[in-house]
Structures are given as C-alpha cells and as structure tokens.
Length: 404
Image (tube, rainbow, N blue to C red; front, top):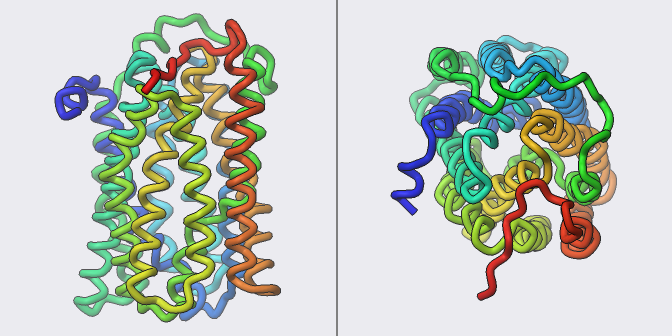
C-alpha cells in the first residue's frame, strides 16, 4: 500500500496537499459556526438549515457549470485556482458578521468557491491515473483532505484554550488559505485534458451512460437523508458537549476518516465499486440511527463520531471513482459536475427537512429519516444501478469484482 501511494502521480499528491491546507482553514471554523449562530447570534436549527441548504445548493449548480466549461475549454487549472482563492478569503468574514445574514453571505461565498473548483479538480484527479488505481487515488486525496480537517479543529481548540474568541479564530483561518493559493499555482493541466478536442457545451445528460444516470438517482436518494454535518455538531451540543469537546470530537471523526480513506477506497479497486459503496451506505444508515438514539454526550458519542468517520472514509473516494469509471475522459468534467450537482443541490431540501423534523418532532426523527434514505439508496445501488452497469458497453472503464 505504501509503495502504491508513493508511486501516485505528482498531480495527485499536489491536489492532496492543497485539500489538506484548505480543509485545515475550513475546519478551523466549521465546527464553531453552529455554536456561533446559536450562542452569539441567537439563531436556531431552522436558520442553520437555511444557510447550509441554500449555500450548498448554489454551490452545486456552479459545479455543473464549471465542469461543463472545463470540458469545453480544456482548461481545468484556472477553475481550480479561482475556486480555492475565493473560498479561502471568504471564510474569515464569518468572524466579522454581527447577524446571521452576515454568516450566510460568508458561507455563500465560500460555497461559490467550492462550486467553481470541485468538478474540475475531480476531473483533473481522475485523468491523472488509470482505472486500476482510481479508488486508491481518490481515497488518498480524501485522506489528506480529512487530515486537514483534523489539523483545523485542533488548532481551533488550542486558540480557544489560549483565550481567543470565536470571532478571532475565524479571522486566523486566512493563514492556511494563503498556503492553498500558493500551491494551486504549481498545478499543471492533465495531459489527457490538454490533448482532447474541445467538447461542445452540453448541459444535459446527452452522451452520458444510462448506468451513470441511474447512479445519480440512487445518490440523490442518499443525499436527501444526508443533511449538513453541522447537525451532528449541533447534536453533540444538544447532548451537553462543550465547545472544546465538540471541536475534539470533530477532530476524532476527521482523523478516522483520514486514516481510513486510502485503504477503504482502495478496496473498491479490488472488490468492485458497487460492493464497497453499498456496504458504506448501509453502514451510514446504522450510524445515523445510533447518533439519533444517544441520550447524553458520554463515551458513546465519541465512539459514534469515530464510527461515522469510518463510514465516511469508505464512501467518499469510492463514489467519485465510480463516476470516473462510468464516463469517457472527454466528458469527465461534465460527469463530475452532475455528480456534485446532485450531491449538493438536494442538501437544501435535506437540510431544511432535517431542521424541521428536529425542531417540530425530535432529533431522533430527523436522524431516523436520514437512515431510511441511506438504506433505500444502498438497495437501489445493489440492484437497479448495478444491473445497468453490468450490460455490455455500459461502463467506460469498469473495475471487475474479484472472487474471494
């Protein structure tokens, strides 16, 4: 495994380092935003759902736009640089906000930046390796991304322990953002992207396989129950955890996700994307049920965050590797645009519905709804989607499942 990681192309390593620094900046403030909204700005779960839902939905629309235009222009590097720069300088503005509308504006700009970079970056990553190593490459990228999410909360916890206010922690997040900007300028266009002919602008599913379209349906159902992770942090606060403990719990979650992403996503190179992803989605349903059932913030909550990190590690890289398998290189940006669109635009109804169920019924009702959606999505993936992918010529670069 270590040798395989060392032999990954330099583009994979560079994109991983960029994600590490970017997530360190993001997760310095991400676990603290719900606390800031509730304890300082006096906003509730519905406002949190609105902020996260709208910001992610707009981000997702931009992911499709950026993906299609990256295919059209064959210039993915510019989209990656611009997206990271915008997000990096928007995040600290949360610390200058005096109302929830200010937080909304900062989060909105942050997500716009993510929307501009995500699909081109994923396409660049997928074009940098062959199909036999895609699970490893995407998993390694997610591992470094999640490692940044470990560093960020730990730095935030240290700053809080040193007596800094929430606002001051937000402002300090500009430091790793500067490192991100410097690293993005070292990126080069992937050879396949530069050599391919320019694609006409197509905003529809034209030219994309039916198996991929079915996959998006299953992904949409899964996403409908997958509200913002900020609700997990709000759940920890609801159960009695302090701000310092919540940041450390988030660090535990991110540590497990970082350690598990590479080996668990690489399993899909050996045993097949459908098998690994189906198990991950089913395990997600179990994790949501357990978090919803917890009565207090004791050792079980720490274990729940760790288990959720393990589930996240298994599904993140595998989902993207499956996208790259299903489409030809010339449509990679468009395919990842659609993937990110579906995975993000449904966060608006998902977050609003989650917040409504939480506030009007109970936290358990919200988590139970998410668990049901994940279980049904896993069933669709194992039957309906897999059947379409098994047809001759259905996948561009299939990964064959090996017998045990």
